[in-house]
Image 1 (cartoon, helix red, strand yellow):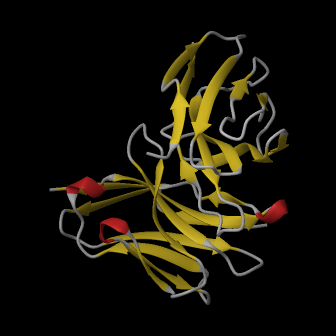
Image 2 (cartoon, chains in turn brown, blue):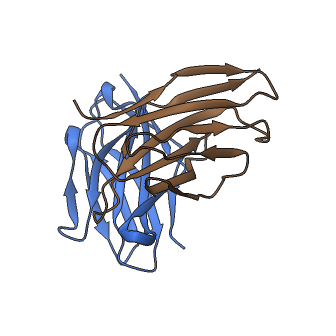
Length: 113
Length: 116
């Protein structure tokens, strides 16, 4: 079945450590996105990529980095520069030329100890 | 810039009662609008979408929403709530970015509780 796979589901990190969240899709979608979710704030866009080897900052990119070396993969690194990294992270993808509907993965919950 | 406001962060209804979740949007162009549902510790699932066709949109699980341009609203309704409807609901508006793609701008969400 086609879909988006995020891993790990739960992750604990000590302060000062970088951590990478994986996102893989087999939907053959060109565009991929990372959103951060905090209680009462909805979803906020971190980074997005429309094509391999290209990506753009979203609204809250500081303290995060991404890469897009393959169409299927869009990993997110939460760096030690991110001041408040504890959150639920959601990866999504979409088809170009459509209405903007996003397809989401199951999410990764990061907790900084 | 596009924006979305969801009125009421928490809504509680009795099983069998009408569900009404409110969403107002701000958009400089005819919008594409969406409702997503999220169950605890899961991703978002599309309930329904408005793409400038019929103003009354029917979605999954018995939900529907009506686009009202004059009120800039896209409220979500369901005639009879079921216990399984308890979840968080997000309204979103599509914002065009370069290359023919879109990004979604989300409201803060409404948590729906259904009690017996």
